[in-house]
Image (cartoon, rainbow, N blue to C red; front, side, top):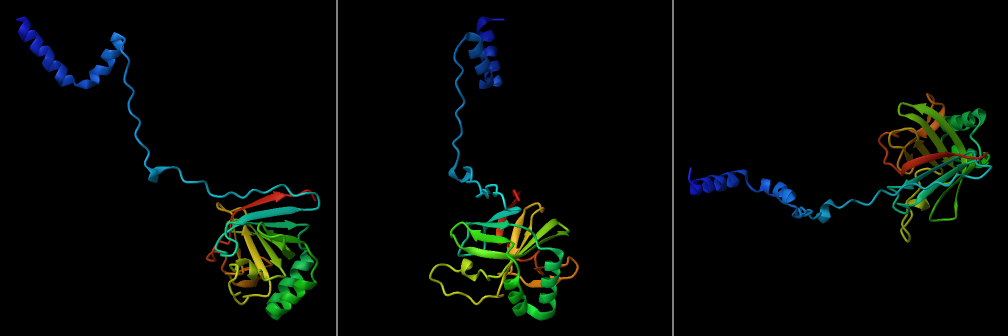
Length: 227
């Protein structure tokens, strides 16, 4: 075989293999291997900022339980942290009396009874030093885990109104907050956008339409206190 034909066959073989054989060849000869260029990251695929988490400090001595969540669907306080501190829970007798009052006498008498009930704790938001007294606090088992029901003797309507806006008439002369603390996505909903009932099955005041009511508190967390 002539040298010319041999070189021609080698050249054809090199073209067939392609440039993939070029990098190993450079390595064998001691030449530097060119680094592959890094693809540019489009702005659209950049990492999104993490959702705001609830930062709860451990409550001091005298607080039995602390609950907190980030307000949502509450125009006046969206993004603020709402904290509920309980000194204690309602006794069975206190709970049963208030449930019976709501069932038999309606909202007006229920609100009056709440005003006469002992203070069990306090609920406030991060954007204000003012809040509301908790007059009813109980818990029960539901299909998605434990639920906590908190009732204040304030309607909290001012919380959801934007500054300068005309206050909408209060739906109830009190406020109910129901928390699903053991669900896959712990959340809270309120009587500001839900219907309040006296539920005989769970022996508690609660929201009748809890499943369909809009979420008012996201990322709900619970910390045991030092009481």
